[in-house]
Length: 248
Image (cartoon, rainbow, N blue to C red):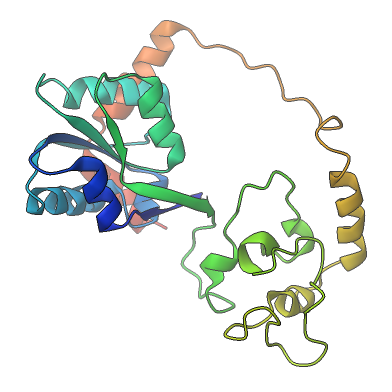
């Protein structure tokens, strides 16, 4: 799941301005599970925008913002009025990109930032700030199968991806770069990290992109099927999207 968080009020105010007529589309998938989207997130952002002097003309939660078929039909539904100044999208970066691809003809404002991939669960976090440690920085060369599920780039202030940095403590657990935190590599080692394998990965990754297994050729779906998926996905009642939040 893509971890999504709200932008600052200052940035959102700057991007929108005051006295604007706005439409909102809120994602019922990742953003909903991150407690920023869904119906609750949509209503929260709507309230903020109105408090700042804007008028929210239309607002809707859809099953997901990233599929362009769903986004396109959702835009048609919320942009029926011709005097809307901007479309606010509450989703990860993929949903915002989808909104641009559908070319609504008005400015698109992202309400959130994507901060990486994360898992979703109800179990107690096994280490402090576990969500932060499991975030993905989308580096393109993942090593977490050798680091106990922890992304070193996200969790280590020195961004040491293939083993502890030269400031890692020999004794104790205090981080040598940031004394206010514990060395994440101590936790990675406790989880059984294979440091020799990480060095081999470092060598392999340096060889670049040329050795990647090519992606499969995509099979294009028909226009009728894409339109049908978009129509159904954009019209699912918003309240049903909250099931996604509560069943996690």
